[in-house]
Every structure is written in C-alpha cells, then in structure tokens.
Length: 353
Image (cartoon, rainbow, N blue to C red):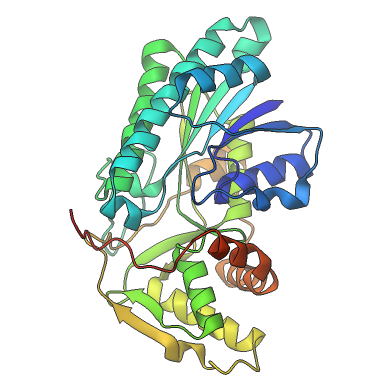
C-alpha cells in the first residue's frame, strides 16, 4: 500500500513513517511543509529507502496538494499535519485556524477528487484517516472516561481547531461519500518530541540544571500514550478499521503532571549519578497556570481493543525511562534545534490577546 502521510517529519508522523519503513511493506509519501516543529532528522535512521518519497508542501496550498496526489496516486491518506501546541494556540490562534481547519479542508478536497478518479478495487479500498486528539472532548471531572460518543467541548484554540477539522472529515464522508476514519488520541510522548512539550521540557531543564516549570499546582491529569504504540494503533486503524468509524486511542496511563515530573526527576537522578543538580526534583518551580487549563483527560480505548485487537504495549514507567535515556543519548538532535533558533520561552499566557 502506498500511504500519503501528512506531517511525516513531525513527532507522531515520523514515528508512523519509521514504523511503515521498518516494520511493513508499505511505501510512504511524506508531505510536510517543514514548519518549526518538523525535522527530517527524525527519519535519519530509516533513510535512504526506495519505499520513501518526500514532498515539501503546505497542506493549505490546493494546487500543490492536488499535484502530489496526481504524481504519487496514493492508496490511502494518514493526515497528521497540524499545529499542535496549546500554549502557542493561546498566543497566536490564527496559525491553528489556517493549518488545522483550512489545511484539512484543502486536503479533503484533493483526496475527494483523487478518490473519484479511482476505479474498482482501488476505489473500494481507499481510506482517509484523520488523526485527532482527546482534547476535542474538553475536560473531565474526577471520574469518567472519554468515549467515541463523548460530546465535543473544546476549551482552547488548538482543541477548537481540531474539533472543527474532525467535523469537516465527518461531513465529507456523509455528504460526499469519501471513505474516512477518525482517531482521537491521548497525550503522546517518546523520542523526537519537539522540546516545547512537557516531558522534553522537564528532561532538558533537569539535565542543564535550570528551573523545571510546573503549571499551577501540577494537579492536572493526563493519559499518556507512548508514541510507537500510537503509530501501531494508527496503522491498525487504517488497515482494519470500519469505514466512517471513530476510534479512541489511549495508553491507560493516567498521571498527575506533578507526579510525572517527579518520576522524570527520579530517572534523571538514576541515569546521571554524577550530576551536580541531584536531586533533580529540587529544580521544580511552580509557575502561573495556563489560561483555561483542562483538569483531566482520560481515554476509554475499549473499542479499538475489542474491534481491532490493539492494546498499548509500553507502560508509563518503562516508556518514561526509554524517553529520558533517548534525550540524554541524542544531544545532537536537540542541540541542532537550538542552533536553528528554538528557545525555551514560556508561551500561553495570552499576552496581547
């Protein structure tokens, strides 16, 4: 199968591309505009490969997207290209509206045109998998889980833009017949995650002896999903999911933010016994909370587990240890990002909004 992966140079997208090129016979066309969080170094371990092609294209450019479909004639689309950092969406929502909503619309139109041009088995087997987030469901209280039937209640510009894109995909299926699948996942973590997200922020701050920021009291709860588990789930949904269905993908690893941070600090203590910053939890610093910070996310993944025989394989303790070790062993990767201009600057305080 030839799969068009949008956002294949990003964190989750690159994990998916690596899985396809290492563990399957699928070929991949990686469509990515190479925004600030994209990095072709994420794919260095699987390239060159004659089953891989790269197209530097913005999904908001309709002519360029149509040309990619015409050139490569994919059998399926896995749509991961998105602006994804909540803090950035608070400070600058326009990019999220443009990429996540307009970009998804542009891609849907190109996919519909391509699908309508197919015949026979190729048309019957074509799928468009839209990869989304559990944040579209809003915030949970102390109990309960998000299911595929949970109402949409997005609370940030990011989650609102993803909810909008989910609705567009649903509409293109029901109105035009485009064969689609939608997935909503919990928080991802693992190797190659851009260092603006919580886990790499904590690891790098601890490594360098800088204050480790914790929003508010650190009581917010997230369900953590190892990125390689997510990639395997996405491929499973594409290959075996039922047309028109939505699948929630979670790790069944609910953790308070402060407990997650303390666990990472303990791993740093263990892996860096000679560090002058031990104990690393002494670096924890409580900072102003994110505006509208959702209290709790938790996924009920029973549908994908029962229908598609997928379960997460990496528990949070093992996944965190692997992740911390990867950042310690791959300074070249994140140091290159700093040379490109990435700064550890706090975002998401709604300054100027």
